[in-house]
Image (tube, rainbow, N blue to C red; front, side, top):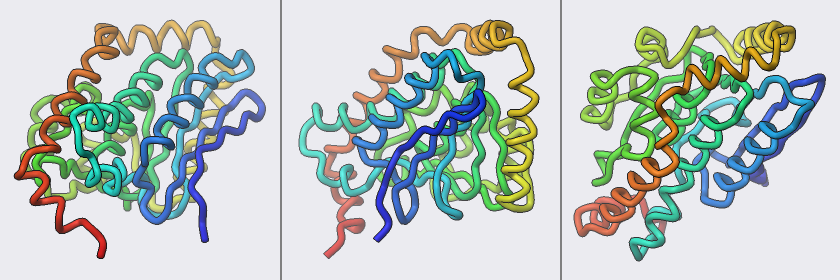
Length: 252
């Protein structure tokens, strides 16, 4: 039986952080915590020049947060803790002084879209459709909204949020600015990522760090903002409406 993990490998100036939770890379709280920690470690490692953030497996990049945990939330405090997971990962990516390159090999939903949006450079395959499904279960993509809106704009964010049951294809995501490019296969995707990283390794580290700071200007308040957003979802998930919708996701 496959096991879940978050691992980091540093080789020749590149930190590759991989997360995996079969079957669809939905992330429980302990893996989100570990992912946050590994991103911080990479950012503080002087031997690291560039970070690759990827998921394991050949199919889904990330199905968002774990529904098993979501269904079992019983208090607002538990809700806040649960929804803070992706908030802390996004803030760790934002605060990391190294460029983060993210290859998206397959479909991504909810918080996974937030990770893709928080990457400094994101590449994808033709199978990497995206969806924000939160509104359909009675909550909303509150935590990831700042990151997604920053990348694709408020209008596209609103469209995805309202059409909560629709997958948007990778070319749409490229046109909106989420993906820099889209490739036919996982092999060609990773070839492109490796070529990009090789180039970035030859650039001045201080220049890249300074440029990242400029690129993320006016986001220092996100440390507080994303936690406040997590509180909204943590409250809504306890509503009778959401509890009723979530019943159909319970396994017997």
